[in-house]
Length: 370
Image 1 (cartoon, rainbow, N blue to C red):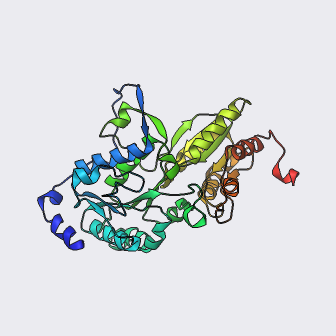
Image 2: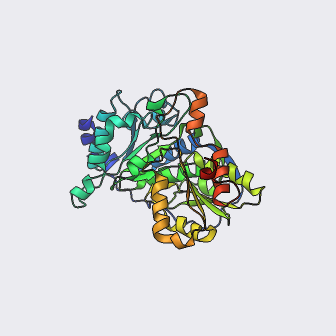
Image 3: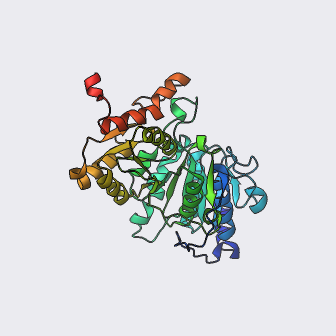
């Protein structure tokens, strides 16, 4: 396959110069009207538009072509762009991840799909030791523009080996950028930014969000739409407590905020969008306004994303805190298979409501109950 890549990069199709900004400053002339788009369609349209705009972009992974993708994210792309740019691979993550990194060395822009990031464990050497470190080890002479994307975190009833959240794993590695979309706007804007970025990007989607529909504006639908990497979004403004979260947990936080608003607690919800780089400025500005912080993630608690956020706030905004930080995460166990136990192992809306009440001194602390 590298031989094919080597031949193609010399052709006019791949050697054409394509220079596009990673993010745009938008004119304020878009209509405020919106329509609905699923996260699946947002990802599909982003891939389609980036492949159309830049002939160096290509897809590869298991069942991305003939089968249209395990989750139909790549639907229609094989028919439109052909097998040279939508490549079905054998079931060998280490093999095709390595080929993708090699193609990026040659100046192409591969998008490597893992059927689930649990399977990317087979390819982690290429992601960490090849993709993430090559630019630094070559003194900036070898940028690696590649996207590793696929579903991450807990799904439903797939057991411990297929339910892990890798956000904290990859976010601890310098040289990588780690993105975690929640809505259709996130999925579309962040994937386009990831493909255009000169650095390797780990793009962590959530299987349970693929079929969810979100409103999207004309701005989001525009083919030039792109979100900046490293910038969080305040999904809901509030004045009493800040919740930081990402991916599917954003929806849970918004549901909890609605419940809490009826009890007079105003919650600010921050959708992190980017785990590395982390938007520390937005987080700390919010905490300095609300004076309270709850971190929320579905991954494991030890050395988690929430732990890093807690450290940032203690280092930069400790004197603004009016209560101890509350940290909500998945249970510190391998994911159970039984549905009732699985639900208990993943944060739920009730857990968020209780944590916010504790930090606002509206309920009895856990230590007092124990």
